[in-house]
Length: 140
Image: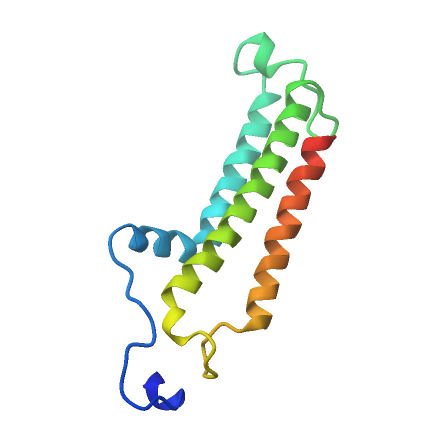
């Protein structure tokens, strides 16, 4: 077990089991990539709908072609880009907080599977990059 690998004096719990709301957070964090891919597909469907002409004239016509967007399509792309940056930043911060909570008893110990400084810096960088992307799109 991990207690032996971590050279602990006795056998002890090396991580916290999720319960209640933490189970939902754990599920969402484990499947964050497939969930985001589904959201990207939904966003692409919305983009296509805005130029389809299937709705009323104001919302689905005169928005340009697929590769040359106008009006609502341009706004839609900007809103989706901001939402994407904000979602990924929140997911990375949530992941850092959750792993810190779950692996708290083992942090600082050297054993396989324990997130280290490299893991932390990677996810802090991802959160910062996503936040900068959100702010860049928001400011333009």
